[in-house]
Image (cartoon, rainbow, N blue to C red; front, side):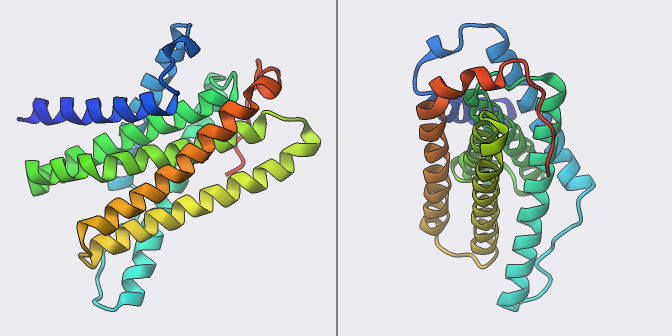
Length: 236
């Protein structure tokens, strides 16, 4: 059962990654174009472990809606800071961002790894039903979060210095929206809203991810050379 659920989760994640790259494997002719996403999936698994053992526990210890909202926001912000920080640092060290499209795929890959790690940890407590539910809802959400900030980060880095500050402002705005959507997801889960509410939030997250994809694919011809051979410096 464990390996069947793991295979199903990976298949779902791969389908969403395939959607993000525009159904065109010809866009990834080099072997390392597949190696880097695998590395970031592994880093996502590491982030999920760190999130459980290092980050503070944001338990919903009060029945007051305000406290639930604050703990939901704290949990979402700490997870996204961890994921984004690890991703930007790793991308800088590996020099893996050669064009804006790479940020989109590699951010989504880290999100996939993080969701897989969380699914395993939650399944140990809630059983296979919890894993199956999170595969449908949580896994696509984390992929969308990573695609959104990963795509806009690489897009921000793919221009001249004088324009980069404005693009970084866009990236920070998108990152803040991701945190907000993540926090709302946590809150809706905590107050046991209907499943359709969680699916709606996933839809908003994927709207951000697809917007990132459109921006990246539209802007790529003009910005490809800007990222060639450049190491990125973390700003978060």
